[in-house]
Each structure stands twice: as C-alpha cells, then as structure tokens.
Length: 388
Image 1 (cartoon, rainbow, N blue to C red):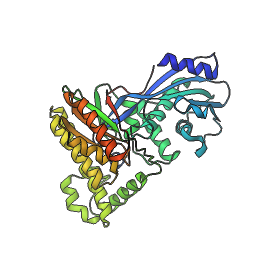
Image 2: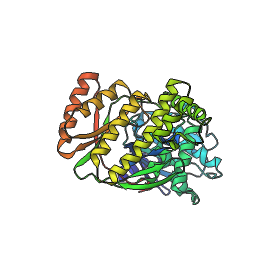
Image 3: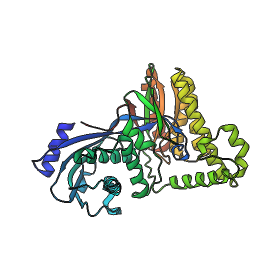
Image 4: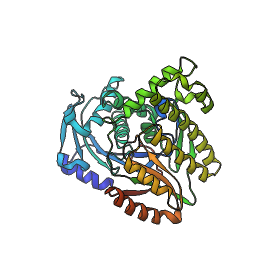
C-alpha cells in the first residue's frame, strides 16, 4: 500500500525531497455512546482500517492536498496564510482545522506541504474518518517540523478542538483519543471526565467483531448531534441546582432517580437518563469482559441500543432493522448502533461459526426491507496513529 501511494504521490507532485508516510486508524466504540461529552466512560478500539498520508515539506507557504478517494476534485491548493473554514474547501477543512489549532497553540508551521490522502474507512459510516484524518494531520505536522512537546493525547485534544471550533461539530474526546491511543487487540476504557484510561484485552476466542454499514450516511455537523449535547447541558444545569456534580457521568442510577425531577422537560429527562444509565452499563460491560463473561457484555450492548433508540433518539429505521435482524440471528452475542447516530454502522459480536450465516442473512433481509445494500467488515483491533 505504502509503495503504491508514494508512486501516486510522485506522479502528482513530482520527484525530490524527503517523502514521509503516516497511518491513522478508524475506530469503533463497543459500548458507551454519547457519554464522552457528559463526563462518563467510553470503550472504543482502533481498527486496522484507516487513513494514509504521504507528505513532503515545501519551501513556500503553499499547502497542496490530493485525496485518492476524491480524485475527481484533483489537487486542492491553499496556504498557511489562509487557514479559515470554507464550504468549498470540503474535506480539506479537517486537516486545515488541525493546522489552525496547532498554530493557535503556538506551534507555528514554517512551510507548506504537498499531501496525498487515501482512506479505507467508508465516509459517513460512523467509524470516525474525520477524527482519523485530524489525528493523522497532527501527527504528520508534529513529526515533520519537530514539535516535540506534543504528546499523542495532545494530538487527540487538538483534533477535538479543531472539530469543535473550526468545523463546528461539538463532539466529545472519544474518537480522537481512540485513534491516537489505540492498541492492538485492546479497547480503551476511558473516563472522559479526567482522561484517565486503561487498556482491556479484547481477544474474543470464539467470536468476532462484525461492523455492518447501513449505507445511510450521517453528517454530525448537520444532524441533531449538537442538539443532544445542548439538551444534556441544560439537564445538567437543572440537576446542579439540587446535587453537586460536574457531569451527568457523576451520577449513579439510584442518584439519578432521586434527583431527576429537577429536569423540567420530559425530553431532556430522557436524554439525561440515557447518559447516566449508559455510563453505568459501560462500567459493568468492561468488568464483564475482564471476567470473561462475553454473554453479559452482549446483553449490555443490546440494552445500550434500546436506550439510544428510545431515550436518546439517535437511531434510524435502517439501523433498527439491522439490529433487530441481528438479535433474531443465532450466534449473535450482542448488537447495537455505534458512533454518533442518525445512520452509519452497527457493531455486533458474533460467534465464529455464525459469521457467514450472519452476513448472508442480514445482507439479504436488509436489502429486502430497506432497498439498501449493507456492507460488512469483520474487523481486527489495531494500533493507534503512527509513521509507517
């Protein structure tokens, strides 16, 4: 892959200079959805699919971008003096946003770059193609220009900051953290209230993680994602009038039931109910996995989906069809929507001997019920972003 991409890079930008190559993974979240901006726990892992960057320094201020995934757009040119968001800049707003955020932190980028991108994460699938590109850009810029004071966690925070403040999506830290800090065969049990984390082994001896892409694209910036965050923030303020908490993740289920009437709007109460209960489910799920109880982990995944569908209302008809079909299929340990919602993917844990049947059955039935062709990825858990 690397050799082919370098060849393509040279064909577009010409020979010469030091050409470097980087890779940044996508991520899937096994459980703990919409808890990351509510001060709760999440449990994501990095994937072996992701985004590649081939890059070379220039001697002027020009930045040239080319994506093999959007080859029809050709080379998109901008400048270090023009790091501003614009709709016509399309996908390049993500790397531009990271450069803008780095400069804002005092890391002045001395020269422009020629950049080639190739991604193996389906766009709009909910597997964090944007976070992958953000962390990738930060890593490449850090290493190209010797910004040694920036840690991998800093890169995650820079990526989140740029997505919030440059691209306008009020996302939490989970996606960028998982992409930056991923570890092969492990998921990250992350407490988003203080960024403390531990790795938990996910070696499923008799089962596989299967991601099913509904092919219903979501765009978090244009969706109700920001609305959900605002609803939770208002609910938190209402709760803070009766209980001393910093985030919804500070509450146990019992405490929530005790204080929930402080939340005056029934919709906001449902949103907060999800955030509190999902956080507790995530803590229980990781404990179950560490104890080797994959069946319990699966049941908690199923409960997570019900909550995301009914309390948080971020599912959609096509995703619910996929999850219902999975629940009816023998050999499925658990299945739920993953990612921001409003389309995208489901994640399922499926017994090894049932994987082929699962793909066959869901593929046919989903097409019949929705008219969409689902895509299936039997995934491996990979490492975080790195130079290759």
